[in-house]
Length: 555
Image (cartoon, rainbow, N blue to C red):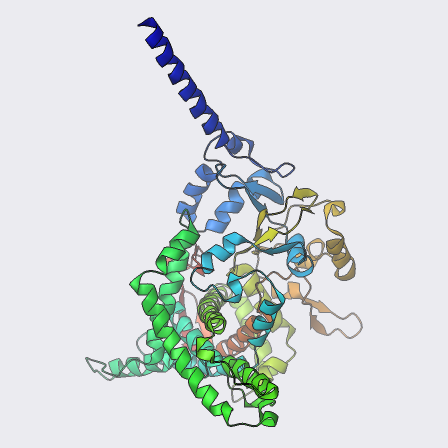
C-alpha cells in the first residue's frame, strides 16, 4: 500500500512539475535591449491586463498600446508583451525615426505579417496584402491619380448642393451628421475615378430630400448603383474593424470569406467592375496603336490599366488577356474603393469639426481664399491645384496631423538591425505611431540612424523650432515660413516629419479641393454642447465620435 501511495505521489509530483515548467514557458519573453514593463514580464498575460480596460474606456486601440508602453515608461521605443505564444510587439513613437523607416530604410523593413493578416484573406492579390516586390510596385503605379481631381470637384459640388438644401430647410439652424454625406461623396468620387461610371449616391439623396420637402410620403425612385455599393463597402469596413480586434484576425477574416454575406459583397462589386471592364475593352479594341498611346483618352484608373495592357498586346502581336479574370486588378480596385472611401470621409469629417471648434482659423482661411479666388464663381480644379496659398496648405497639413485618421503603421524587420540604439531582431514587428499630437521624448542624436541624422542636417529638426511647439494646438502657420528679404509667406512641407500611408499626393489633392469649395460656400457654426467633444472611435480608421456640423450657407 505504501509503495502504491509513493508511486502515486511521485507521478503527481512529476505532473505538477511538468505543469509548472510549461506555465513558466508561457510567460512573456521580452526582446533584449528594448524597454518594457518589468511587472508585465512577471505575469502570464503580459501587458494585456493593462491594455483591455483602456481600450474599453477610450475606444482607441492604438492609444491604449502607446499608453501602456512608451508613455508609461517615458521612452520613445518600448515593447508590448504577450504570453509566449507570440513574440512581443515593438512600439515606436518617434516621428523622425518613423519617417526614416518609411522613406529611407526600405531594405531593412517591409509590411508586417500582422498587417497583411487583416486584409490578405479578403483581398489576397491587392497591394496592401503583399510584401513589396518589383511587380507590386508596377501594379501600384498603374493606379495613379491621373483622373481623380475632376471627379473630386464634381462630387463635392453635388455634396454642396445637398448641404445647401439641408441648411436652408430641414436642418436650418440644426446640427446633422456629415459623416454619412462625406462617405456618399467619397464613394461617388472614387467609383467614377476607378471605374469611370457615375454611382449617383449623393444625387439620389438630394432627390430624396426634395421629395420629402414636397410633402410626398413615399420616395419610390429606384436606388442607384451607389446605394448598393455603399452597403457592400460599409459591410467590409465594419467586418475588418471587428475582426482586427479578435484574438486571431487572420483566422477571423478567413472564416468570413466563407460566409454568404462576403460572397454577396464579392459578387455584387465584382459584377459591376467586370461590366465596366467589358465596356472599356470594347471601346479600346478598335483603336490603333497610335491612339492607344494617348493618355488623354483615359477616363478613369481602370481605363489607364486596360489601355496599357491592350497596347502591349497589340505591339507584341498577341491576343490580350481577359481583364475580367485578372484577380490582381479586381483586388486592387476593391482596396482602392474600401480604403479610399473610408479614409477620405473620416479626414474630411475631422476638418469640419476643427473648423467649427476654431472660428478664428476658419475666418482667416476663408479670407485668404476669397483673396485668391474673388469669384463670383467657385474656382475650377486647375485654379485650386495651381494656386499658391501657404495658409491653405498649412491648414490641410494640420487637419491630417491632428486627425490621426490613419493612426499607425506596422512594419517587420527584414534583417537584424537597430532603432534608436535598440537591437531589433529579424522578424520583429514594429507598431509605429503616425499621430503627431504631442512633443516626442528627447533622443540622443548619436542613437539615431545615419540616414535620419543626414535628413535632419539637410532640412533641420522641426521639433526644435517653431513647428514643434505646442503640438496639441491647431496652428496652420507652423507649416509656413516668411522670407526675410521679401516678407512673403511660403509653405514649408518639411516643417515636421511626413507620416502617411501610400497615396499621400492624391490624398492632399483631394483634401485641398474639398476644403476650398466648402470654406467658400459654408460657415461652420458652433455645435450644441453635447456634440462639442473631440473624442474619437478607432475602427479601421480613427473617426470623430460626434461627426456633426451646423451650417450657414454663404451667398
